[in-house]
Length: 227
Image 1: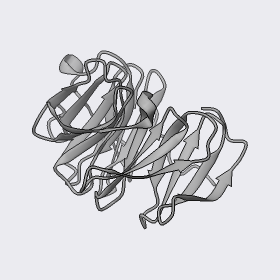
Image 2 (image 1 turned 180 degrees about the vertical axis):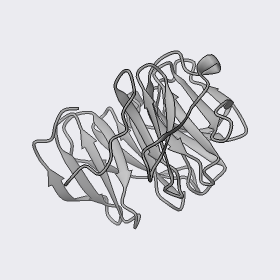
Image 3 (image 1 turned 90 degrees about the horizontal axis):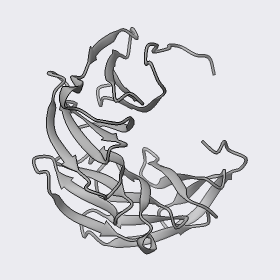
């Protein structure tokens, strides 16, 4: 439980963080739309991305590509930017145009990015196109606030504003089932490394762990912080 390193310097709160697949670089993004790269071993700041063509508002989340050459940043300006890690410049911009992007993550299988949206539920983009390949529509039209993908890139879970988690096949592009049990918005979702379980957090101040074998709750953590 002891702190082993602190990465200091962001002028405003940092809400986005990600570690590259090799475990050597940490990316962080803050409310001023700054994105910094850090050496994971020494804690030294390595680079700040060029903001001249970046986000106009704060960073919500960050994700590294499978090969570690790109970072995707989801901003509060309804834009996702794919950045070159080597050059620190934007490679591609995805414009939500009212979709309200949340929690954009690279598919670990490579070649695509999945993002939650208030507009549909989720969208999938090819990493070489600014147009969505397809949408995963659900949550009774209320949309989702986060999305996670298993490590083989075959299943996604969206954290819905309808208090449910929807489980999707990224192979068939169809809904596999729902995770029902929270009493308010789902805020975040994450897979266990095995892919057999997924966790969801909610503004009802609980975290639930679910089995994807039968979509049932296997654990509940009560009394969590609202934020």
